[in-house]
Amino acid sequence: MKKIIKRQNRLSREVLTNPFPNKTLKERLIRSKAIDYKENCTIENLKNGYMQISPKDKNKLVKY
Image 1: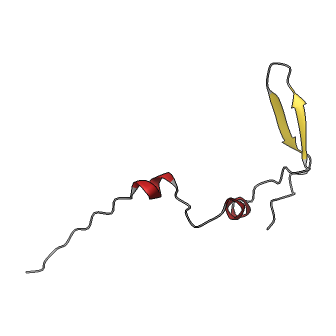
Image 2: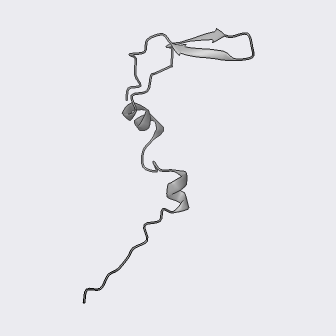
Image 3: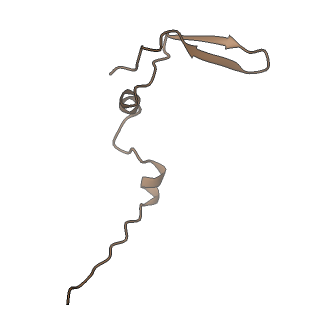
């Protein structure tokens, strides 16, 4: 007869709160191909209490 062992693969609270513990924010932005808004944005006042921020050049990505 074969002995069957069942493991419980539950994630800890620490892993659930931060799924990227070993990666920096800059590395995650580069990997996701995020647009760099530093010196590359225009701000438009919508006159209802909100503002719209849009990039000047959408091809300028975050670089390392």
